[in-house]
Every structure is written in C-alpha cells, then in structure tokens.
Amino acid sequence: MAIDRKSRTVLQLVGVVVFMGAMAWASVPFYNWFCRVTGFAGTTNVATGPSSEILDRKIKIRFDGSKARGFGWDFKPAQTEMTLRIGEEGLAFYEAYNPTDRPIAGQAAYNVYPYEAGGYFNKIECFCFTEQVLMPGERVMMPVSFFVDPEIVDDEDAKYTKHITLSYTFYEIDLPDGAQAALDTETTGTTVN
Image: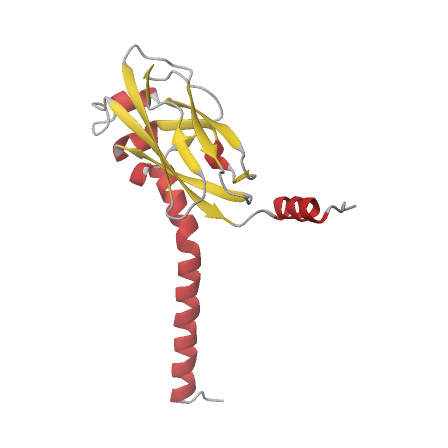
C-alpha cells in the first residue's frame, strides 16, 4: 500500500515536531551536565570532602546574594569576603528571612566569577543543593562549605586568579507537598493520619 504525498508530508512534519520536542526536553539536563563538567558559565563542582592538598598561595573569596524580582524573602551573605589558602576548606553563611505572612519555598541558582575559576570551585555542602522553605517570620543561616582545587594553579586561563566571587540568586518555587500539607493542617486545626 503506497502512502500518498500528503500523508507522507504530514508524517514527516509530525516526526520533525516530535524530534524538536525531544531536543527541547533534553536541552536543559544536557546543558546542566555540560556546565558541571566544563565549569562553563561559572558552574561549580561538587566534592565529597575537602581537598587533600593545601597550597601556601592564598585566594580571596567574595560572596554575593540577590533574589528574583518579586521574591518575598530578604537574602544576603553573612560576610562579604574571606581569604583562604588554595585547597583549604571554607565555610560561609547566607542569611534568609521571610517577612511575609505565608510560607515561601525557594531554590538558589549560583555561579562563580571569573568563569575560568568555576571548574576549580568545589562545594562540599550547600543550601543550594535542595529547595528551602521558610515559614512566616522565619530567619535562617544557610551554610556553604567549599574549597578551591589546587589544580587551578596549573590552568593557563585561571592560574592568575586572585579572587573569586560566589554568587547566589534565590527564586520562588512551588511549596513541596509536605510543606503544603503541614500548612493546611495548621490552618484547619486537624491532624492527618
């Protein structure tokens, strides 16, 4: 049975649309993977523990915090900078406060500047790894532990880096199901079994 020209054209167009949809769906995870592997656009690495090597050379780490337009929290770094030896573990804190009368969930996006240093900035633990929920009036100190990989001194583009800026931007996300259920229970005065 032969497929006529119109049917073949329709099938080809449907195939193109499905292919483009699949590419759009895969582009975000692929881009995130690419940035993590290469440090592109200041994306940092995740480490399981501190560096085994600490150099005598020092580097200054600056901290920056911002929030998406309309996001209800107050958010800022607790300190603006620290100086560490390359390879030494650092611990910094960011302060978040929810001045509103409703719970707000947020997720932090981050980057490192200069971009060449992103692949050498290693986070061990970070509040940015998970979503955060602040209840009305809640204030928290959120930690990030990190180190700068000693291999930075061998990179032609990054070896002259004297300071690195770690920047976070918080944006609002939907409340997780558990937080919404707890809020619903609180407001109705009933318990859920």
